[in-house]
Image (cartoon, rainbow, N blue to C red; front, side, top):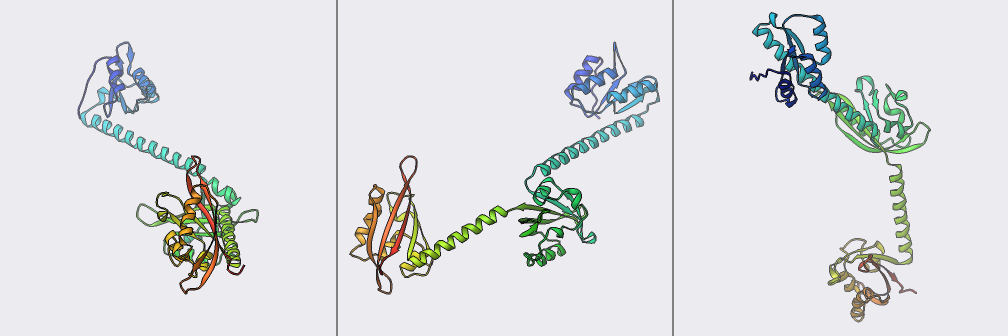
Length: 360
C-alpha cells in the first residue's frame, strides 16, 4: 500500500474530493466535526470510493450512523491488528469493484432494455428443442408487428405464426439450420393475430453461453409487406411495359449525361426491345452510343450523330433514319429524345424511344 495522511477535516475532505486513492480511512474525531459528517459530505459530492470509519471505542450508534452515511466498514482502533486492517481494506476495495461492475452491468442492461423496447425490429428469444423452442421473450415491436401481447405468446412455439399452405418450402430449411445450430435468414408469410398475412423478413441466430454451448435462439423479425408489394408492383409494371414494347416494336433508352464534351463516354441503358429492333438478343452486348451509331445506315449516320448534340442545345430530337442489322436486313426507325435539366439548367439525363416503323 501507498499511504497519504492529513490531519484536519478540511484537508481530509479536500483529499477525498480529489478521488485519487483506492480507499480512505477516516477517523471519527476530526476536531469540531466528525468523520461521519465528512463521509456524508463526500457522498454528496459524488465520491464513491470506499471509506472506512475508525473510532477509539465501539458504539453501535456510531456503527449504524457510519453505515447510513456510506461507510464501507467500521473499525475500532483498540481491536485492530495488521492482519485485520489489511483484510478490511482489501475487502472494502474488492466489494467496491464488485459494486462498480454490478452498476455497469445494470446500466448496460438498462440500455439494452431501452434499445429493445424502442426498436422498430421485432425481437424474439426462444428456448432450445428440449422445450419445443418455447418463447421466453418478445419486445414491443414484436407485439406491434404480430398483434400478440407478450403474455399471449410466452411459452409457445413460434410456429403458430406460420402459414403452412403458402410457405411450406422454407420450413425444412429452417429446421435444418436449427438442428445444426446454424443461423437462418429468410422471408416468409406469417399470420397476425387478426388473421391478416404479412411478409416477415426474419433472422435467427444461436445464442452461446460462457462454455460455448448454445443456450437459446435469438430472432429478429421485420414486416416487409409494403416493400414486397412495391417490388411486385414494380416487377409487374416492368413486365407489362416490356410486353407493350414488344407488341408495338417501341423500345426505350436512358442516357446519363456525365460528359457533355464527349457524348460517347456517357452511360446508356437500352430496354430489351431496342436490342430486338437492332436484331440482337436482349442485353447481349453493352449498350453505347457507338453501338447505336454502328447500326445506322451510313448515309444517315452523320445526321443521327448530330441529333443528340442539337437536342442538348434545345432543338427537338425527332429523327427518322434507316438501320442495317448484322444480317444485312434494312429497317426504318423513328428516334425521339427529351433532355432533362437540373435546377441550374445543365442537362443531366436524356430519355428517349426508338420505334421500328418499317411496316407502317
